[in-house]
Image (spheres, one colour):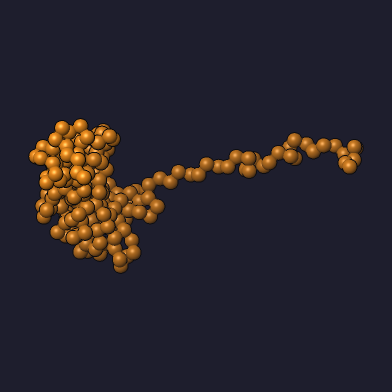
Length: 210
């Protein structure tokens, strides 16, 4: 039993330290300017007027280049900087920006064990030079980007849809493509649907295959 003469602990003594009561919010990591990075300087020297900006974020270098220079930049990275593997080609639809789209390339160097990201802006109706004959691995990703975003790659050896069918209306990864989808009016299986037919349940020409 506690001694009745012992005073109760003060509020200050029982309260947790301020550092424990309120944790500091993590600091926001900002991208740093990478204009002086050796890879960026190498691109700038080899392909004049190609580099528009360069950033470094968590050790990742991203270089924005002029659209018409992308093939020259890719050739330089492969031949001179040993980025011999094209990991991916994709795009981003900003919708409200000008230019509307960004085409994004990821290149990897086995000798450096490192990668570099290259971006270029492209607006509605503009074409991007294809790098599919420089990097064979870029062939299908360029087709996928064309299919999903409607961005055409000039000089591609076989630019056609790869995930949807020929005759599909629209490009599913654009921001203005309806979430519920659209009735394309195109036949997925010509042997089952007549010309102009399609998979929509409301299509009067739709046939149920048993």
